[in-house]
Image (cartoon, rainbow, N blue to C red):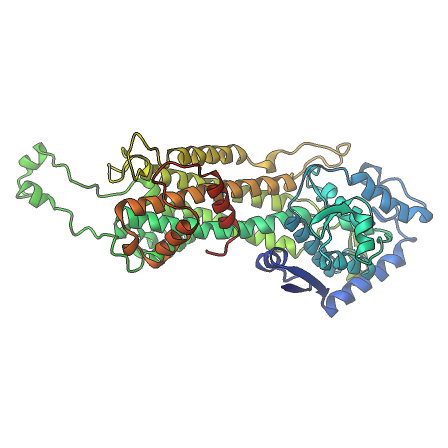
Length: 527
């Protein structure tokens, strides 16, 4: 399937870019208005190159910007910039995220403030169409003059150097270009800077992280509804009236979702069955008698917090994730260059739109929210596995055979606990790890790309714990034989689990099953 994107610089969405990079091939084009903006911006830039001192076009970079470069060396300056900055280290970034970054960079060019030529637009478009995805190492940028190091590796492939993914294999870029019938791009003044000066890489990673997180949150909420069914929770805990009394939008939304998922459930309870004090103690007017006697109910009147407070916990998470996604979408449709070519006002604007703080803070907030959701799931798992917490309604570790001899889900709980703990460690904000660099020119930095990469790891951890929770809930359903009583949402989840992870009766090695189930969850559209 070919996904066709028509870019105008202002309407790219997370859903669109996720669909484009994750399903089939991508073809990009610019709207006529965008083409016009690119052309006139380039024409204006070329008209002033030899008459004005413009950063990064006829000057050095960073602390060397006071050095004016001779007009005969302006192209060499751009090549030097790319080659000197393509020095990343570590594992390659996920090719889908790199492709997302390339599309976002092309969308930035479509805004008409970068001063690039149509030739560069077409070259980047052709890379995307042929799915030539440069090898971009994870580490090396501080996210303040943008993703300089990571984006330099994309630019390096465009000029026919470095390595890239093509046709499923890692190859030299020069060989790929020859095989695809393309030529190495010949840089023009400013174009090296325009390729690497911006937040496209952290934003590309962030867009996919947001997409994964939104789907995750839906599944976590559905798992929470399944929990409520299994424990025969009281209905008032998710009632509209209760949550309207505290009008936090995320909390009200999650409660509404829970009500939708458990609609028609025969498992949830009202409080009508709870005996009143008058029935327990006799005449309630006998204050002396009530003051001296205590009666213990057979069942509690409130669930533990990880069950009763699902809207109150997931609500702020929903709000924070929503805010992060909105920030990322705005950044996808922003000009993050320096300098900005303001052709409409015949001005070259020097500033700091490349600074990644918006993205870094948004993704740090998102990863903290996702870690809290992971902790909620881990506690819900513990409820069903720990007979001392669930009041022995379930056997130890949901054992379906011989507790003591067989261990059932005991080992899986260790994985959930250790994975949640790792996310806790990773949740310290990368945003505040500012270290001055670049001869103190970049004296306060965002660490935005690292923030995006760490957020991606935290989200992947959450899917591991989610998988274990769904396995736990399916096992708990089998223990009580409740599959026929589940609502459509919960029964669908149960069936999906059981297709991929049979009930644990006799202890078995489940490593491959678990990994396959986690992978399926991360890539399915079940939510």
